[in-house]
Amino acid sequence: MLIPIENVLSKDEVLHFRQQLAAADWQDGAMTAGTLARSAKTNLQLEDGSALAVALGNHILRKLGNHPAFISAALPHRIFPPKFNCYRNGGAYGLHVDSALMAVGGTELTVRSDLSATLFLSEPDEYDGGELQIDGPFGVQAVKLGAGDMVLYPSSSLHQVTPVTRGERIASFFWIQSMVQQQDDRTLLFDLDRAIQGLTPDSTTRPDLITLTQVYHNLLRRWAVT
Image: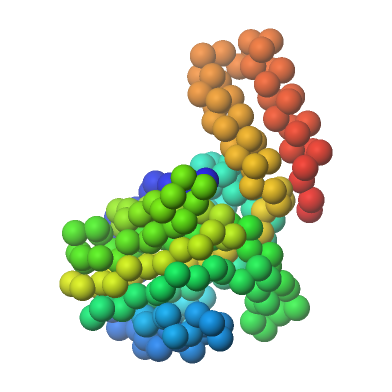
């Protein structure tokens, strides 16, 4: 299931990010790819652990911590520190799958990748190509969102970034270990939570709404691992 999440960053925040990244020391992205993916990856990437990557990544994490749609969709337990990449001059990332387990540099922490996230920092009209193509149960879906918007998708999916033939595609990407590991369970909880939120403005004391809320939390209690 692909879940777009709008306005993770405001346009002003995106502008600030872009100003900082314009002067960044970009490195060859293939340096961080696995053995099989290395030959398919032609992009630039901000050095992991650099002061800029940490500062911008922490800003994203703070925003996500207060974003109801993200919390509802991901039910995050751990989040891998956000990374940053840039595609230009034909840069692309061929079909690949994300690693299941990712060690966080400088710590003893390992993150299981249940969900992958791409936060777009370039507007769609700034570049040609650069679609994030995700192979799911209903075929391949192409994603190209506005700057400040993000997409969540299962890390188990095969996916790729098509060649950027004009302009630059700048984005942040990272992975989430959810409290609810199974995708079908997360989807059910997300749909139920959206339905509850849709009903809440009408009345918070309706018996059926209270029952739905009870069902949601009892299912979360059954499936969540913390």
